[in-house]
Image (cartoon, rainbow, N blue to C red):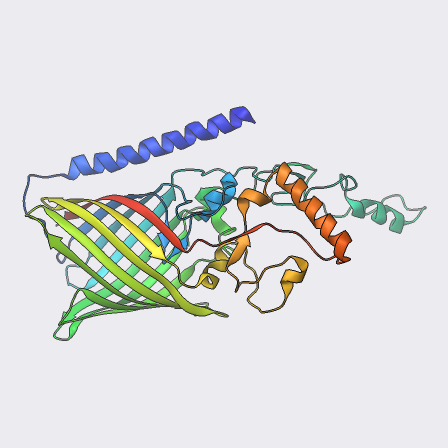
Amino acid sequence: MQEHALKIGREEDMIRFYAAGWLLASALLLVPTYGGAEEPGYGAVEVQTDLVSNYIWRGQDVMAIYARQKGEQYSANSGAWTLQPSVTWIAPTGGFFVNIWGSFALEGREDVDSDQRIQTGPGGAFVGNSSWFDPGLSAAIAAAGPNANTAPISAYTALPGMYPEQNGTRRVDELDVTIGYEMDSTIGVIGFGLIHYAYSSPLVKSNYGNLNGYYGNEAYVTYSPAFLRQLTFSYYSELTNIWQYIQIGYADTYGINDALSLDYGISAAYSIYDQVHGMNDVTATLGVSYQVGNGSFMISYNASYRPELKLYEWLYDGDAYNSLPVWVDGGSTGLDGRVSDPSRTQGIVNDYIINTVTTQIQNQTGNANYTYTPRMKIPRFVHYVKFGYKYLIE
């Protein structure tokens, strides 16, 4: 097992090495002689490569899976370093564009046995003293009768053992395609299009929130008024679940000199889901960019405040949205902003503590349905740092 862990560590080091090399090589190969930066024109291709310290999307900590893998509390930056390349083609006719964007985790890509239990499958409960063999087998033999030559064998997933949980960060690798149109008019800039969110690996068909392998297809409309083009109103609607994300944002650039500029922006958004809605996130970004010809180096700090934690519950435990007094049985609802704490719910010691507390409370209260689960508050703030390089090919 130690050799396997060392192998995984070496593989992750190599992935980070190649990613850094790709970022540096793309920058060195594409840097031309110094000149003023250019805006994308019709018939242009824009290539961008970003390296982020965590994958935060609309306030959602996509890499929270990494905290579960490590058995750590969810925090403001519990995610893994991630490579996010993109290519945008702008049609020669103007307005129409196609963008392909990817996200690939650089740390913790392999599944890890984080609960350290003897179990019959990933994420399963401890088999206990009486569950080493399929308990349904003896019942099946008895049901067959004394004169039967054979007995039906009930389905059994696997023999008890140590199994890695579905917590590898490659399960949230992503590849998105956007087809859109943008036009500048006397009333402002109007844009609309379709976004297809797809996983790039068959491993991620499960274990991202409660989506069960489906990520989404989304339609959007944006508008920037002519009198203040830095201001943008955006409306996104998921086409299958009819989830909606409504955002107002302001972003601008302040030129320090011909090459160096200060980039800043702030946005606020409201989300509507099937059973819950509210203020989703307030996100701010501050960065600098250095332009060389058609290329630009960028670094920025990005932070999101999450006013209503109930909108993020589905990313963690997926508790039901109701007002039932489930706390009586040690439960939690999707409205309380509390989720199980990975640092206190995984591992042999934590299992012992949880079982001991559960047994004591059951005996003292007479409530056989009670189960103790250590919980924590979902972090209200999440943040990350981004390093990037962008180049325009005309």
